[in-house]
Image (tube, rainbow, N blue to C red):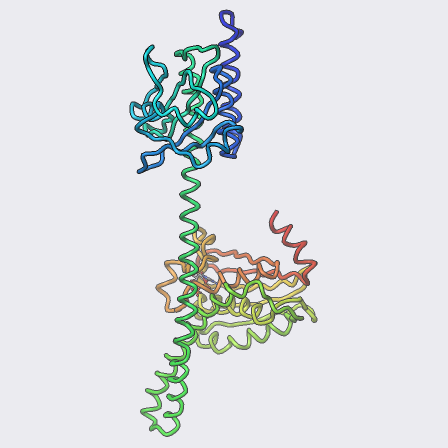
Length: 422
Ligand code: ADP
């Protein structure tokens, strides 16, 4: 509808609408606040405007936005809450004027004095769900004018935009702080794991060594007991190795020792190593290697760790009578390895989490398997360090298939990473 009474009102509304649009589209905090104070000055015909924020538990207000020519002079300046027009607006949670009466004098005007003499001012609180976050304040209405109800409406509209932006900024800062804390804790945890696993390895080695030494001269009955000691200690050592893996991977990720790795050699070696575990669990462990010279440029130890972790899981999570099949083949640009089992499978709701560190599917914990929820996260980190990709498909009570794609070489890896990112 076209305005008929006051074209100026229409212009103000148009401009406010424009500002609302910018503020919902703009992501940057500072430019948005600057746009708001520019609009405040323009629409209330003021010489300048500022946005101040209330600092929790402080008696001071911080200047968040001010005209560019004041910025330097206002650096580190804070405004007293108790002795300013802005403070009054905050205290009463409503607009405050200067001059409110003819004899009124502006409290704490001195900080503006170095730029211009204040003749009039209007401060409107920035409210978010009843909480005062700050103030938007305009100064020196043109021609020694006096601020009106219309000016309050304008500043209130702009304050509403500022409130959302300031609240978002607060949340963002909180998130950043939490993230920082989490990273610190993660670092501490890695340090602890690394020290603990290092310290535990030596005494365990001694236990295993001495047990086998005593075993040589022991009676048959004693040998059975010593065997229990050795087996338990070896199991403990495996767990500590797992911890060590996390540490090695976290710290040594960027330094892959690349050389030629043949998957047609690596896969059969891993399958062979797990035959005893498969036999113990009455699981048939098979392999199908398609072609020869399945070579990539990669870190042999780490790639072996990937296949080992997948085969170990497949065997562990497959019931007696089940089958695990490992395949390797070359597909354009990659060596593809799959580990397929017809075991207990993974519930669909858990699929996203299985690659997280220390994550284990709740229901699987009841099985005597004894992992620590590390294997898949380590595998993922290694595969991704090679520029490859690891994926899992699974149906509960039917089985799982893990697929690993490793690029043939570094050039292929950087091309692949772009594709995977997309
Ligand atoms: P863990 O050391 O516990 O095996 P992983 O990180 O290797 O840790 O695996 C995380 C979890 O994912 C496992 O605890 C298990 O619940 C589930 N999982 C992994 N592989 C399989 C599989 N082949 N079949 C069923 N569940 C699996």
